[in-house]
Length: 176
Image 1 (tube, rainbow, N blue to C red):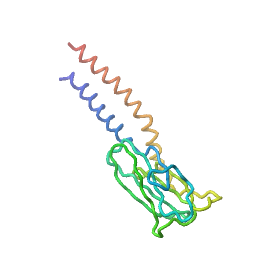
Image 2: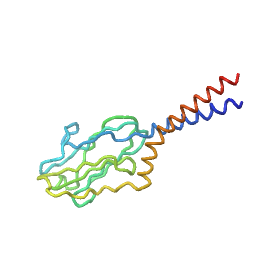
Image 3: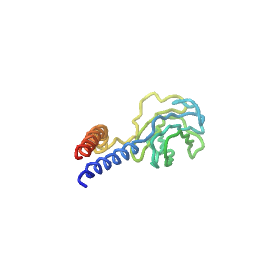
Image 4: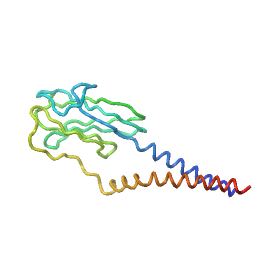
């Protein structure tokens, strides 16, 4: 019975690491276009009525992705949220209540949960000459530390798991 304890611990850690690896999905790329499957654009003509937010996602397990469009003043022009599973490509049409995008600068943010995963700044009409602050909230200190810990902890835990499994196998084989 004592020999089964290391194996049980090793299996538990394997399941834990596998669930962490699966949860690391997200938006892998994104661009804007004037067509649902069009090329990347950041400059749209005056009177544009629809802008498509096209993005690829991977490793999703039912998490929501939000596409939020801000105008030059930081006001939300449109927001769409949808949950995704697996991997794929999505094309979301964004419009305004006026029926067209007034000339100016816009920002489109792709959110995975509550965190910004991608930002695109774009213009309608003539490009805006001066830079405008992006209304993207900065991640909290906890989120930054969590990201850094995750980047270190997953490989370290994998190495530890390999050592633990080798030890458990050794203990089972040498106990006979």
